[in-house]
Length: 282
Image (tube, rainbow, N blue to C red; front, side):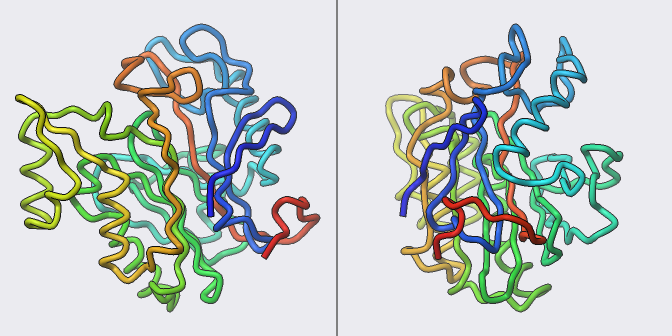
């Protein structure tokens, strides 16, 4: 298993071989292949900022990314992320929320078993995860910064997929996309204290102290929590690159500050149509 780069019509994005299957669409965007200018160049998927990007540019960026990953924009369901542990069950009336309709909820994780709905979460250093149970035919998308990690949100999302759709953790495939790595995620005691309070001594393996700072490995910590929730290690795919190390390829709050764009991860059950060759492998 591994992450693969693709470039379609200039849009640079990634997929996980764990999720490359004709039953679903998925993709992780980079910052490359859009039309935005200045601090938002070029594939910015952030709708608000100071200064704001132009709505026309953002709309075109969405159109390009959706076309590249073979999804219909009208099926998008976006999340209004607030660094909490709400998991929203997305149904047909949610189609278009955050894209063509207002978002009337807050959630840092979305789950569905409705074909044609495409769940999207955002990041500019936080960890973004995509989940799929091929037997229960359900998917999930999760945004987990350090607060969401301390709230055990990815594992809670696995639990909600089981409760709502009958998913089995042993069948859930998890792809952990680009996010800040321990090389660049330097923090004082607040983050390690939150991890210890949530997970006890088991969290120590994912935190290293150097002088007066801690380096926390959020990707591996979330992978551990997924394993503890029953997801097998051999169906957890972890992308190694750090967003803060590669601001040429990814949006990074740590490196670029507030005036920057967002990348996204999207997943949905395929509603029908032609399956691209590279998505048709079992």
